[in-house]
Image 1 (cartoon, rainbow, N blue to C red):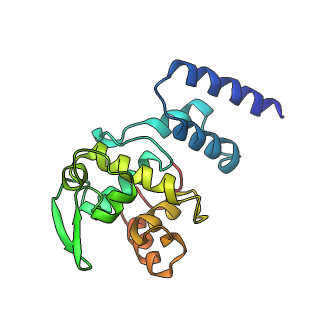
Image 2: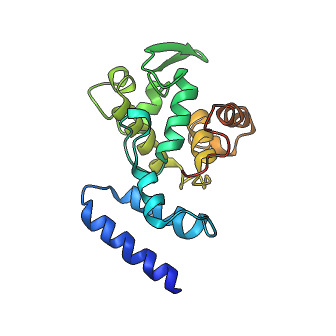
Length: 185
């Protein structure tokens, strides 16, 4: 191990000890983005870690594989500004809430919350559903563990990251202010 990696590991260990309530997925995402994806960037390890767990624009997203920034971008695209917009017909079935979650998606994510519609219209519950869905399918279908992979899977189902029809969704997400080039942060 290089000296920088050892220092980063010690810092990560210290931060994690101080934040016992953090879930393993956040630490894994931080570790991956810090040591694997971001070599050469100028941000300190602590800055990157705090960005990973920060809550954007007062929204209380659930932690997990999908970064807070990526969740915010997906939420803005799905509900026109990240709002609880209720249910709408979409491709022959209802899609509800912040992330426009369909009932089969909610079932696949483990049925968090009281029921599908109320979970979809609660920011923490619906983002938890997205996180659990990605945890279940992203690695199984060998999707890239980055915002593009997660967004395309969210849009196209378990294997959506490999479908050309989800490229348009990713392109639309990239046009949202603050979302162009979002990967992990």
